[in-house]
Length: 250
Ligand SMILES: [Zn+2]
Image (cartoon, rainbow, N blue to C red; front, side, top):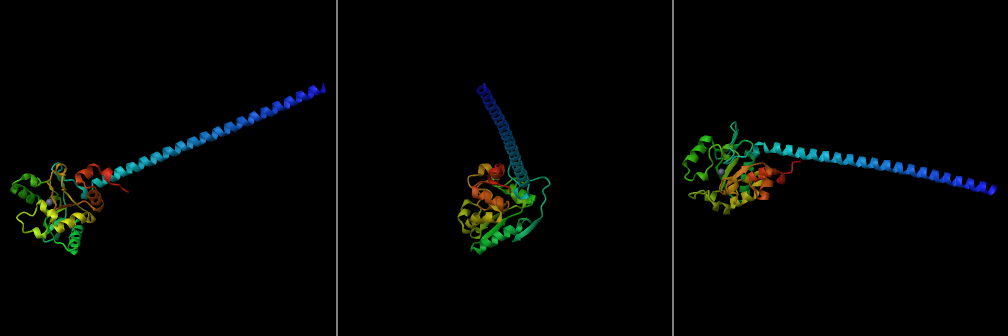
């Protein structure tokens, strides 16, 4: 009789222990699940926050790029893009009566001066042109494709200069492909980007620029863009079209 009581008590105790164990296990499971859910929620929130930040950064880049594209030094003027109607600039003399946009003068002066210091002899033969000068040139050019239509020339914007090696000044026409072999021209092509200039009409880009290869026409775009354009061997049209590929706004 006593033995049976003891056994019943033992069973009850074991059942109780089992019940307590189950409760503890359940509680443990609930706490763990709750922690896991919390962690999962936090991870999802963090991921959403990071994505938001990434999107904000991307948007800021696009805004910065759009702002940069509208800067005066990236103005696109070509056969298909006329100068803005309200275009107005202040010009300043570089040398020999040749003028450019006053904001470009110092860079051009410095480039010419450094080229001379390196032992070469660059010579400006054309820079800023008024509308009437461009019109006169256009009217008097036999091959119209050699001269920009008035209102479509970078020379009218004061952002460009035609520079030759002075050894070719006596040629009947110094503005020919052979200009690229002359020492001053070689120096300019190699170093122009350091001063914010690009060789605006490169070889094999005639279809994109609408202008023949001109190893003498230098256009100011600013140092950063000039480096991007020259190092990638592209022209301004391609650069502005695919700016996201080449330009990393900080
Ligand atoms: Zn030119």
